[in-house]
Length: 231
Ligand code: URA
Image: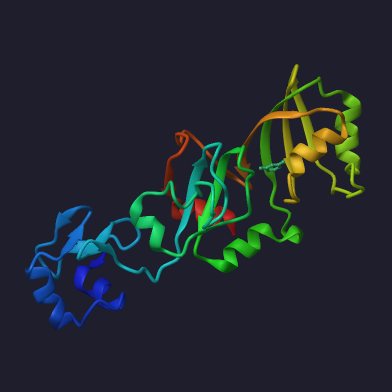
């Protein structure tokens, strides 16, 4: 916890002396409530701090987990479609967040967003081998032969060779797939190369991070324990 005036001055709003007046005039809110005192203690990570109705710029690194719904694109801007930024609560829209990797427009599930370029690089660089686990509903039934083909490293229809991956059939038309790469439409193309069309796809896990009970369309800040697990 930090003093409110310290956080505001670090965010470049005004000097500590000027902030006294700004706060006194009721121009600062913390979690929607007008702040009364410069020495008020706030959580710089979690509290939502606004000056004149605008969120303050944060210097800290932010990592959010989002339960992405189908129908939104994993980018920060799009001329036609709603983006993952558009569905975040307002304070998170001006923090320079961007998605770490991508999920297709039709794919649901765990998507991380950050303003920390190093973390994004760490999680997406193929040499770091961060496992991503997906649940798929698909046509046909995955067989032992399919499992072995995934394990051996599939060759996609366009000749792209994939690293070994795990296919776990869960029953008729349902499978769990674990991959370490992030090629374009990778799971859909891997399944297609074995004659199965993916009808529904959801990412359940990235490394040790799972969606838990986060409802579809909702996001939350990652805890410091979760962040340690990403490193
Ligand atoms: N593989 C896909 O085909 N789509 C995704 O969104 C993620 C992985």
